[in-house]
Image (cartoon, rainbow, N blue to C red):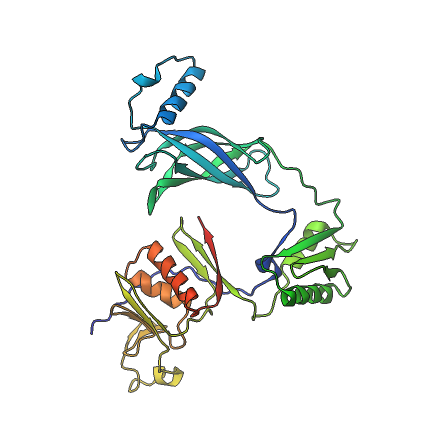
Amino acid sequence: MRYIFLMIICFSSMYSQTIKDISNIIGIRDNQLIGYGLVVGLAGTGDKSKFTMQSLQNLLRNSYIKIPAGSINSKNIAAVMVTAKLPPFSRQGDKIKIKVSTIGDSKSVDHGELLITQLKGVDGKVYALAQGTIVANTNNTTTGFIYEGATVENEIDYNLRDEDSITLSLYKSSAKNADIIETKINNKFGKRLAVAYDTRTIDVKKPKEISMVKFISMVESIPLDSSFKKKIIIDINRESIIAGADIKISPVTIARDSFTIRIKQSPLNDTQWKDPKLNKGKDIGDDVKIADAQAVDIDNAMINTKAEPTVSDLVRSMKVMKLPMSEIIDTLKMIKEMGAIDVDFEIRG
């Protein structure tokens, strides 16, 4: 049997879960922005829809150029919707990431130039202006991103300085978690500041001698018990996965069209790893070994971790097989659905 090993970088980090990981502060949140725009400079991958040609005609008319819509015959332009999230406390001049998606029959917006586009909130006000060169999503070229592609023009007023309390809202309703957070906050400050109003809402009063910003920092960083569900963060654009190094996977087998994956615990313990008579695998470096009794096996690409397999081990194995990020994400979701891992997913696009 052939053994394959490649040294790769797997984005993983160990962290202890805090109050910030399972709750947010009411009033401090992102705000959604949306706008309609045109992308030019496409190499024949644009669209010829009527509304695209009409939009271009209107744009040219605003530049005092009159031209009949019927005379425009180009597939180098595309009509798109532009969306973005305006972070809390954004200030004029701040840069934010935008997402661009075609609404016609354009085949790709990669390397197209988004013309200046107004981004509005649900109140109809313009909060940002977007423009720049698009980098298309590798898995779907009809959508793309411009990092720092929009400039904030208007701010949303929210003043923390005059507040004397904050209200925490749990992402998921849980009487147990609400009670734990109330208790931990009160123990942290040595006085009764937190009161759980229901299974999701905890009101916390600020001590007079502490600024609101420092108080929020102290509350959000309070560690929680390890029994709280862990999180896996998947950043599709950067093709990275961030997961606690201790997220273990129960034995499971998944057969897909392009590969079959088998996850099982290795029978080799620490003593066996140190005994060359018991360990038949080949050492690779100081810390990594590949043994006959593999822990993660994807079509003969095997990695043994000396202990129970983790999400980090699985991702590393799938990288060995050079599987696309979409396959890795789908596999993690399937493993979660089968109950082999107990985590929450956060997908960042």
